Amino acid sequence: MKLKTQVGIVGAGPAGLMLSHLLHLQGIESIIIEGRSRNAIESTIRAGVLEHGTVNLLKEIGAGGRMEREGFRHQGIELRFDGKGQRIDFPSLTDGKSVMVYAQHEVIKDLVQARMDTNGQLIFDVSNVSVADLDSSTPKIRFRKDEIDGEIACDVIAGCDGTQGICRPSIPAGVLTTYEKIYPFGWFGILCEAPPSSDELIYALHDRGFALASTRSPEIQRMYLQVDPSDKIENWSDDRIWAEFRQRLATRDGWAPQEGRIFSKVIVGMRSFVVEPMQYGRLFLAGDAAHVVPPTGAQALNMSLADLACLLALASASPVRLGDRAMLTAYHRR
Image (cartoon, rainbow, N blue to C red; front, side, top):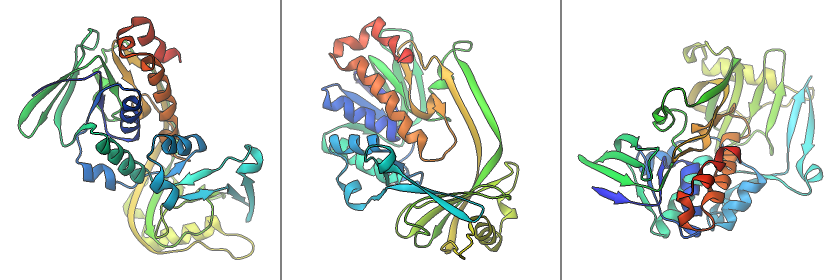
């Protein structure tokens, strides 16, 4: 299977899907490959806070209709400490801006549908993915699909395949410098079947550690407790979890979180890292492949759009510019 495109994109997360659709709107061809199935990427529940600029971008590209109907517009957050809450009002501090609570997997559904509606090329369920000839004029993506080997010849490759992807490790040793900070705490996260505990997100400071009451939908809530990163999930029974949330989120007027069946538990280690340069030859790293921040406020999702804006600046004038060496080396500086 031999294919050719202008931009080969590894990874069908929000960054890869958004980049592909934005390129399409500028008349630039792309092909996305993804190791997981369409169902898998559309059903994995993740962060769901969309910043003002992200909301506007989804609307501008025609992928924001369902978000507008089903998302929750939040006008602020609550910072809670010493049993009292302090509300931070976004519109009064940001010239009327707000955020939208809309789960990442829902964004992915909308972007996949947008690509399908415009005959975009997405190849799911691939294996043995690799990139080659990165410092040549025709870099390549190789993969296996349905027992058939495939190769995509590209003008450039966008590595949007996250922290565990193959693109960043494919850059030769000694090219990248990594800046990393490992934090001495983790987050114990749960998903539970319950109504929202609050109309807006609550970030709580307590002597026992941080707590966050967030939301994913009217029926599913995401909540976090600060824990030791070496802690074990089996140490946390449901009763212990809810007792800890009640204690850390308690207010002087007797407020308590909504409780329900817990169906997911995970301990997330906290780290930050960024690599430089975010490119090698004609491979460009975007999103989590290039930088990671602790998962609060869905910053990874929102920050990746800044990378896409820089990539688009390289390609916006005409497809010919994809081969312009000066433009290619401008990405990291931008």
